[in-house]
Amino acid sequence: MNYEITGHTGLTALLGSPVSHSISPQMHNRAFRELGLDYVYLAFDVTPHQLKEAFLGLKSIGIRGFNLTMPLKTAILPYLDGLTPAARLAGAVNTVYREGDSFIGHTTDGIGYMQSVSDAGYEILGQKMTLLGAGGAATAICVQAALDGVAAIDVFKRKNSTFSSASAFFQKVAEETGCTIRLFDLADTRRLAESIGESAILTNATSVGMAPDLEQSVLPDASLLHPDLIVSDIIYNPRQTRLLSQAAEMGCRTLNGLYMLLFQGAAAFRCWTGQKMPVELIRECYFTETDKKRKDHTP
Image (cartoon, rainbow, N blue to C red; front, side, top):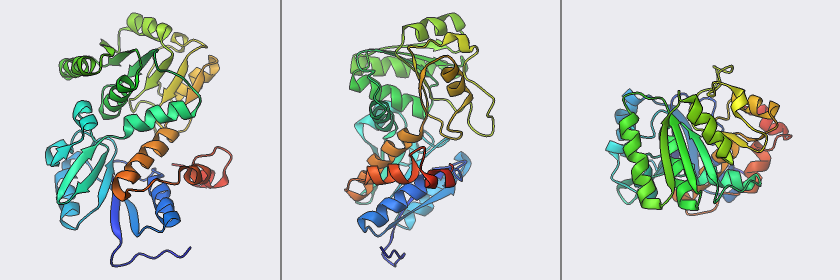
C-alpha cells in the first residue's frame, strides 16, 4: 500500500544510547503501514544528560508516545506525570504514552519477556528463576514474573553502592506479590551455583555480552550451567551472546532477547494506537531465523 508522511502524521520514537542497532523502527513502521495508521517511529540517540531537554522538546511538539532503552528506563521517571501500577512497582519505564496532556510511564519489558518465554514453549510458572542484574529491564522482568506466578526468584547483582536500595526494592516486590525473592552478590559463586542448580531458568538482564564486547560472559564459569536449564539473555545484538554459546555447549535450551523485543513492542503499540500489532507479520518479516529480511536488518 502507498504510505506517505503527512501534516497529520503522529510521531512515536525510541530514546536511548546506542539505538542505531535497533529494529524497533522497522517493526513499528511496518505495522503502521499494514494497518493504515498515520504514524511514524524514529530512533533518537539520547544520553541521560540530554534526556530532560529531549523529553521537553518532544513533549512540546506533540509526540504521541515513545519507548526508552538503556540507560534511560529509570532516568525518565522524574519527568513523567504518572505511572501505571506495573511501572510503579518496577520503578522503571520503557514505554510512555499520552493521556490528554499528561505523559504516563508504563513498563512492557516484563510482559514481553514472559510472553517470549511462553512463545518459545517453555513453562516456568510455579518454578524458580535465577535473574542476573537489577537495572530497569531486570526489575521489570522480576515484577512480571512474580505477578504471573513464578514461585521464587534469586537476583544477583554487583555489591556496590546501590545494593541496599536494590534489596529494599526486591523486598517490596516480594511483599506485594507473594513471590519469594532474594538478592545476592554476583561475586558469591557458591550462592550462584546453588541457585542455578535449583532453577528452571537463568536470565541475564545485564548488558554484559552486548556488542561490541562480544567475548564477555556474565558467568564466572560455564560449569555452573546444567542441561535441564533454560538460559535466556535479553541481549539481541549479538543474537548469540557468549553466555548463550556457553549454554548451548552445555546442552541447555536457550533464548535471546529478540522475541522479548517483539512482544514488548506489541504491548507499546497498543498503548499508542489502541490497536493490536500484526505480530505474526512482524515476526515473519524481522524475527524468523531463516527470513532473508531479518538477515538484511541485523540489529
